[in-house]
Image 1 (cartoon, rainbow, N blue to C red):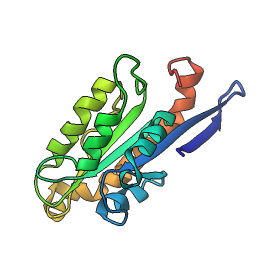
Image 2 (cartoon, rainbow, N blue to C red):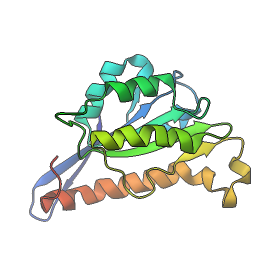
Image 3 (tube, rainbow, N blue to C red):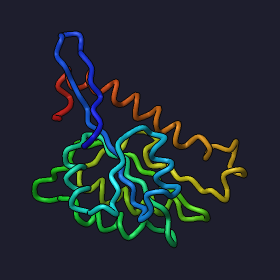
Image 4 (cartoon, rainbow, N blue to C red):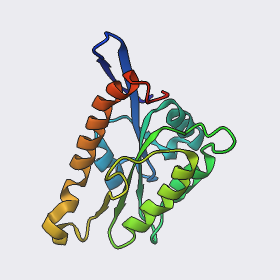
Length: 178
């Protein structure tokens, strides 16, 4: 089940936001899931079943999709998940917030993010600032400009926390449908 962020708005009404992360790696102990654990969100492992992941995503308001990079692309499990998510005519994912994370040893991180972003956007997922620039290239980490790749996960955690805090304000104004 997705994690709940609970709070109370000025009018005294309670709000909540459900968030989770999705591990697109076949490994439950690899680098992809290690980065997801730093976000302190529940982790859904695609290796446990695609249908279970789809159900959890449909119950969530915010989803972090993470995948290892294989030959400039997402994992087969992530591809299966994307193909299983509902789209037209009901667009059940419309209005959900998505963050993307690609973990690699060589080039291909940005290409993998693009392979997730296009179909998820078509399904109605929204992407906040910096949600599409999160790849971690382990072999280049030390050489990245100002070693920015070391901070990708902590920056993402900060952005998610900010969104979850702001969620109550937006919901109170009637901007959000969930």
